[in-house]
Image (tube, rainbow, N blue to C red; front, side, top):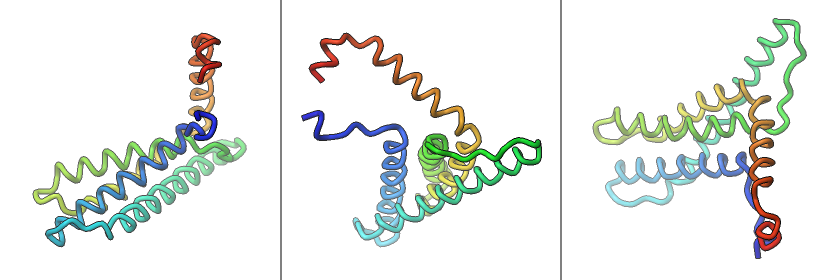
Length: 154
């Protein structure tokens, strides 16, 4: 059964987490605005948060390439993009929580998730070339300590 359902990597988990937090922010903000549970505000919350994360990642990679070329180095071409997706997820969480804390009535949660995703992705794009090798090393050491019999059962 474990072979039928693939295991998600950190980029996919962060992407789904960003969508989930943006969607929940959309539900809560729409429910506050209309006074009843609204599920039609999930999609706009998710998409606006995802657009903010994409633009933040683009901005981060653009600035990273700009600074690298100004120093005479080759531009970095992200292959795995683990850094900006992890940063977007963390930024979405922090931005939404800060908006909840700053707002007296809990409004504009989607704005908090968009701005958080933008800045999180932009900041996560800078260490992107170092994050993927660290994650691969962590995965390799995790599997080294697992007994072989248990790995065969899974």
